[in-house]
Amino acid sequence: MAKIKMTTPLVEMDGDEMTRVLWKMIKEILLEPYIELNTEYYDLGLPYRDETGDQVTVDAANATKKYGVAVKCATITPNAARVEEYKLKEMWKSPNGTIRAILDGTVFRAPILVKGIQPYIPTWTKPITIARHAYGDIYKNVEMQVPAGAKCEIVCTDANGNETRKVIHQFGESGGIIQGVHNVDASITSFARCCFTYALDKKQDLWFAAKDTISKTYDHRFKDIFQEVYDTEFKTKFEEAGIEYFYTLIDDAVARVVRSDGGYIWACKNYDGDVMSDMLATAYGSLAMMTSVLVSPDGVYEYEAAHGTVQRHYYKYLKGETTSTNSVATIFAWTGALRKRGEMDGNEELMTFADKLEEATIRTIEEGVMTGDLAAMSTLDNVQKVDSETFLREIAARL
Image: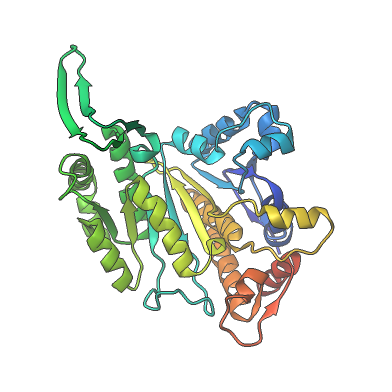
């Protein structure tokens, strides 16, 4: 058959370890036989990031802004052990953090549902997407230990040098701890726009939850900005799309989530999103079955798997041992990016291909052929555990 053509490139960011191995296999087995892949390639593997002083990450992010769509392989964020292992010049920052900052984006994580992998909450028949604000709060905090008898205050000095003070606590016989957190209106506004934009794109309801009854200034500011952005920019569009935005308290949201059947986007402040995204990943069954999409306020999309580089399997692979590594989330990163590229370019063939590849992947698992991690969880009869490459070739056969 004639291969599907792509008029505009998408940005391709290669990565590290076992996911880098799978990346190459996915392209060779599932993509290149059917598509004339048109990508602008950036090697975000740790050795090349080190060689370029991490400039390649910045270049990849800027290319994403230029072309509007990117697909990214999992990458290593080095710690001290990695610095020694790779003989790095320095302990480079998280590539995801760098890209997120340049795109001013919000991360949306959603599970991939298949029959036989049952969520721990049986009513969840549709995916719940977590949108996490990725700036400020305790992740940019200032904190200290306080001696007994100390008086602690917040002091704000305005641009004219005028001070405003508020007492945090007058410590008595017991010392204690304090921390200061902050956020900025511009970041909260970008977060809100990203959430509303993504909800429109997915045609799903958007929830936002905080604790404004207790945090009457800090959390209330989030609530007010979300409402203002919705009323001025998105209300009419939401009504035309037949979807809803509503705010509720975080404890009420948790209760609603547990009772729901899914199928919506749940926007959370930084810490709430950090905790709840891991809770959802576990409750749905597997982080290896979780997609991650970075969306900018102006509609730039970067797709990747939510999991890491699968280091343990990579070391087995280097020894020549057979691995059974789950590639589903990485496949769905590619299908998400190809579908979005197709949407932006009016390329129906590319969008249809993305749908069919996802369908073939899910059908493979639901027919009992899967990697070891899924085989251990599956409730299906006659489960066949296969190695990494065989799994991809089984998908190709169904595709």
